[in-house]
Length: 376
Image 1: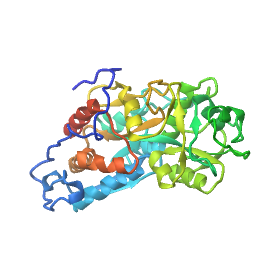
Image 2: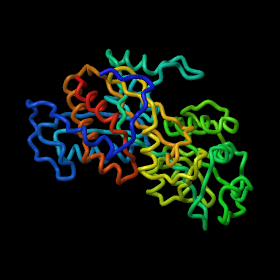
Image 3: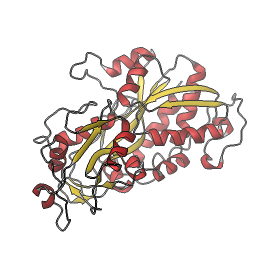
Image 4: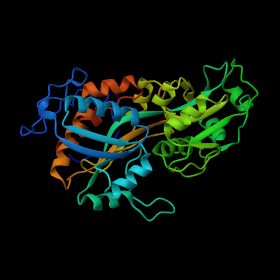
């Protein structure tokens, strides 16, 4: 079905990718006969395929895809999936080079060359595939502004203050600008230690999209996978989260799951309609006001980072699985399709909510299901 560009997405009403994703089997000629694991009851023997897949990319989805892989391989012991969380930029490059079977990315393939590059990602991926490459949204990853500040459990930040912190314009925790939006909070007179992703990262790109859209005067730099602010670089999501955990006064941007796993403080964000805590519900509300672009089964979401919608948490990313619509190897195509069906199934998505991922709108669910069914 053709996707209409810039059509408002309806609000989230349930579990991510749930309800409409009562997915059909991959084919009756499958040799796998293992009884499905109770942990992922939507994957049946008929849904399985055999063989090995290699994938690479987004570290934001690392926890989600590793859970999905474990459950799929439990239900389908003839399948092996290897995922290397090297970051979205690396994953896209490897996919375009034909070195992986699919890629994970926190940003959809670009239709124009980035500054300093002549590569148009979508066109290059299409050429590698020999068919259109599709961006399939699979999970929503809220981006937490995570901090480690003794005696401070709750912190509110605005777009301008956040931009100034990460640009190095605000360097002390008791700065008047922070104090003004945190009445009653005892802020220490210590240095703010910013940590950023040193690798090319879709998380960095989405975080800087937020800063640029919501606080352009304080963050004029164009969004990019490569960090352009201040601070100390650490590799991947685990690197920045671990650095903040071990550093008093530390702050970073990282996926919700990494902030939760490391028991870091998570700032509430006030985009202009009041402070909003990061929860599955508030992230879902933000996704619900997104618009959609892309043709046919190439599904891309356009998020409104500057939204002033009450109760909507605005800093988030959508992780895409980037696949060839018509794979050159039929056996691998069958396995990719089987795995994505399992990944998108309601039982699996319920699990993903438990480890820090948020729902996608129901209006996207049927399109994702249709796109997976159309892979061949």
